[in-house]
Length: 443
Image (cartoon, rainbow, N blue to C red; front, side):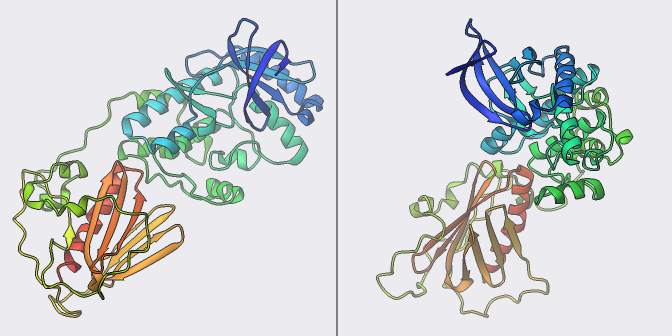
């Protein structure tokens, strides 16, 4: 334990471009976030002067969506800045733990961040490093951190190395190019934050240089953003600063009632295709599979136990080969016909030109289901099975995670879990997967 500027340091909270952040307490026991500048920055007279002016400006920032500056030492050694300590996970940690946000949550987050930028910009400050790691999801709403020293750090780094300060993937084009930066750069970063909160990435993945290049020269990827917000987020990510909305305009748009989608006069396809995962929650008794179908599948690609006898095709299947959760009660399915003995390869109805195929993948796992069979891949390991080997294919979901389980005639069981991150993507996967399974498992 040590004291810095009269504050008792308890533990380190993190480290960033300015220096190290500690959890500390006043003599009366109140918690603060104590940010101590790096020694090489503090030794630069230019940084010291900019740090002093930025701290004075940051003291004036108010509002409910920032961490207010409560104390600072702009002349001593080390230089430090104390802000109110805001308990809670960062937005980055919240997304990693709970997944993507839906449209109402995105609107609430965007409005809170726009309001914070209003307060920051009204004091003549520009944040310049708005990102999920600098946003605390406090109990009373999101709070923006590290707005008081951004310009001081950038000024020193540009002078010393000619590189832009900030985080690639959230840097505005003018930052990446080393041009003059205004509050419009923070609006650009807010747009990239909303894409990340929706489960996407405005500029994809790759090296910092690649991300900065795409932010300057390529259009953003806003496919993860709900349709009701896609245009607004695209406007935030405009290449030209003048084309981006102001924080006040953002607030006006984000606090409007969300537009209601038009309801079609008639469904374009049968209800069995349009059914959402929630509709499958209560299966009719007629579709109840044998008890072993509900057993928890083993780890993906666990080797199956050796069969007691050589694998063979049974005379009669104990259950339908394609285990699908049933459709809504409004459109009850017909009772399944008795499962027949699997036909030899090459028999059955002819497959038309352009055989259906489902390709599902997330960052770690993947599955391909086509005319050849099923291929599962998890963390670089893969296994593929021909339809003649497969007795059942089951798919279940929990939240936005889809589990695909392949059960073989010889008793082997293999499973693969895929994270859709968004309900819309899960629905798309199911719409791709079900027709392929229905086609090939009945051949």
